[in-house]
Length: 192
Image (cartoon, rainbow, N blue to C red; front, side, top):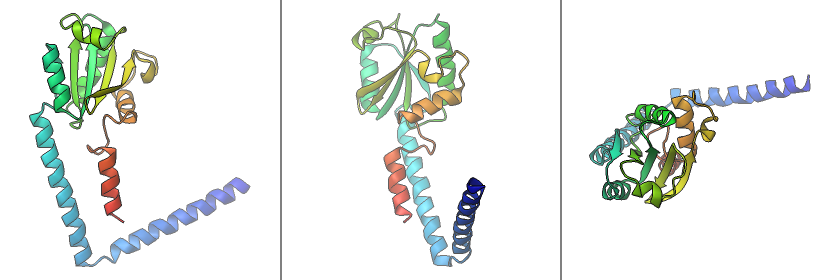
């Protein structure tokens, strides 16, 4: 019974907060609404500029790297890079490819690339890739984590694209709002 009373009290507090927020929104004057619209228009414009910059750098697609120089140029040119080390005839690499091909056009904020270890063997040697598939996460030109095999995706072959998306999000490589955490924090602080 005590849990029910506590839950009811919490629900009452939340309901009051929602009602207060709705009242505040209902009572906004034209100037306040114009300020909100202006801020949102600036955010949309900023995102469009970012997206244009990302598209110019190759974001929004899944690229195969054909030589080490291309790899390092791509890593230097993008803040966040998700690199899949693969072998074409490996079934699990094909699974990762399928998920990345679905994510790349949706998550412009990171560059998605792959390296065929048989075509460019110097890169997996340099980064000590011992198991396939390996997804190397690069931020600011530095490798900070590698996802080796499927353990982080639930240790099963039939994981979903959403499972991969959650793991990449947890590592800060992709975001729900097409923006990065520091950008979201800054934007949310502006609301106060």
